[in-house]
Length: 142
Image (cartoon, rainbow, N blue to C red; front, side):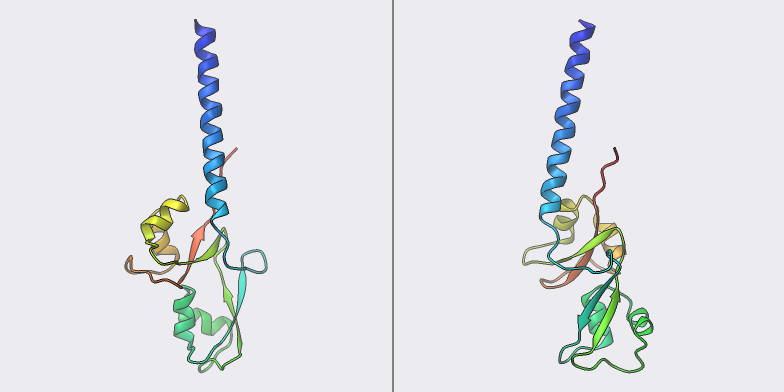
């Protein structure tokens, strides 16, 4: 009887592990619509007409003063100027799509709304299609 119970526990444990791995696979397959260079540390953005330091910082959820400082920008950016944007490590950027909410993104990425708000310097849960959000990676400890 004890042997059957142990076997049953092992079977349920294996099924549970398979479900977790499958879910992580699905979550990871939905990611990655933005190319990040240098091991998730820096990306390059080419300034377009109407861009300002603040608008670029807002687009990539980074601090405007930090962006200006890291690129030695005294004034505004010029059209065609390449701006280096330091990214968070341990994650990736994704583009917000129509119908996305912080709650739905957090659910899909195995995190929570509070973490997404903190990582992206958001004061509210308001997001718009086209915004770039940093989302943390999902890790499974083995």
